[in-house]
Image (cartoon, rainbow, N blue to C red; front, side, top):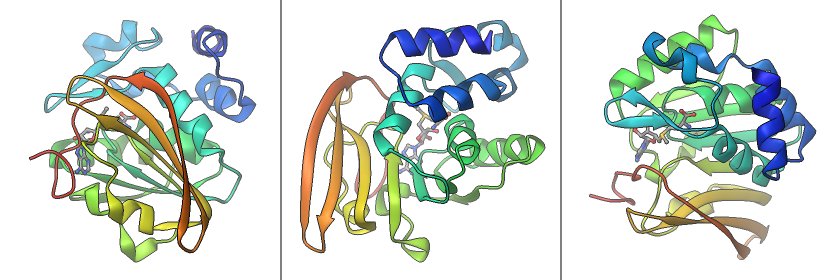
Length: 206
Ligand code: SAM
């Protein structure tokens, strides 16, 4: 089922072999409620409690592909949710930091990731301000829809680092990739429309 899911997302445009390998390797059904296990390998988002979702596998893969991760890169994820994307990043050899604002999801993700043998550094809190203690990052991925690009995140990028963030209204967002090309210059690309749950916090939605 995992192989078939990897094939499905490859047909939709995912070509990064390391991302596809991670999708083939990680048991997505462990990240959802047992009642939803039979839908875990469909290419769709599923509820995970607290009104939140585990993103559609294609979306996780597309965001990860845009990060252009190399082994050992330091990556910050905003919105741990189920922990699935954090596991993909860990599987690809990244040094992963992830922030979640819902306590229940934070604890659940921590447990599952430990069970699977992944060791990201997790934090409960508002990720709209990033995580300055471990900055700068080679990649930052925001897995909830932001009203604007949170400026603290841009500042926490390494030179050459990439921020991947969906930006727009609560109904639909444009995937934006910002690359820090020097100390004070950035390149912005606008890529594709998506629909995420809202990024809620000081530099996000109320
Ligand atoms: N990456 C997740 C996964 O693999 O399951 C996707 C989770 S879901 C689409 C987005 C998550 O972002 C939710 O769990 C939500 O609680 C979280 N979130 C929203 N605003 C946040 C914020 N300011 N800081 C941290 N997490 C936030």
